[in-house]
Image (cartoon, rainbow, N blue to C red; front, side, top):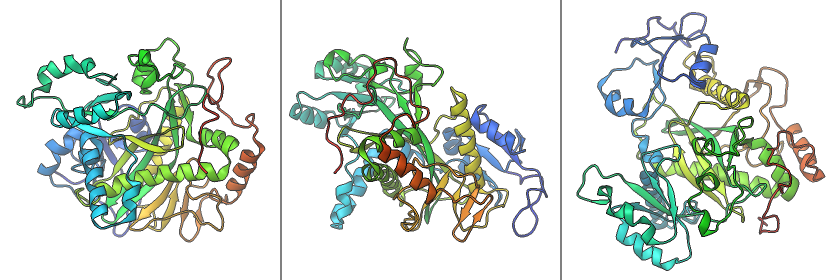
Length: 458
């Protein structure tokens, strides 16, 4: 592969000294963010950044030579974390290793539903199925997205057609692999509706493991009030929050996209349960992301040319237990509302700042835009002397662009602490819902939480 057409100057490259090129087939927030940076598109090999499909990594990456300045948006074997069956395999393997070492951290590895891989584990699944005769189960194809191929069932006879299909034949090399999981039937509800949460983590290296977590994210709500009755199992708009599924509903809100910002969720929860409870919940979300990354750290093919922007989908139940649903190596960067586009373009712009192909960073940054550095060989937490929180997840994004370990670069704002924490604490203690901007419109008569009396963290 040829090198980029303009050679960088000695030392740190100057953005004024050269033109930067990108290559991508995507025409969404990715394209928009790169064009706003003033970068030029190319269909040749003279790119600085190639935002590519996952298939390109397995088909092309190993056969080319990259110059030192070129970057691609995937690690070579990203599927170890982002394919549903491999993710569970690696989580289980890592938990067994921790148990072997008698590490108490092993007890924390219980944040995924009971899972089996079919067709290989079918006999084991049937034995487990018999132990939980009243439970719901959910089937998911490991290689598909946007809710395609997913269905719920409660009795084995309900998957008889699937079982007799050719894809169940283990001798069929083209058989489609599924995971079957015990369904989380008691999700925490807002206005009687189920939701999951999309969080973004940027990994720039697996050795040392370097992780940036974006403060923003969003909740994806179902358009139908939730019920765990067996009669509702075929209602995908009730049980699956994927936008591609929800758009098919007659009650889908195209104005809001059925989404709510992570910050609004945090404020809402704090108004009901207080700062301490919600901070523990959000810290557990952050730790769930880190534990997923720990599980693949030693098997991921680290490469200085690679980075990964992961989309983690999590939810929590009515006792505030956090579950990881899946991890996306190519989280959707299409937007269905203006707010959604602004979030994703801003997130991508911050990610490109961190990857720093332009050579503008100093190397000691701890926050860039909405991204906080949460791990670089060791955990990095907010300063307990200046912050009320153990995680910045769901907090405001300050106006200044960069905070380093020594000083803030940009405006003279406080970087989100402690003033931000004080304001949030006052908001949460007031209990006033009027101050929570952007709350989703769920229709007249919708209660804030149909499970308000359920158990909370203590």
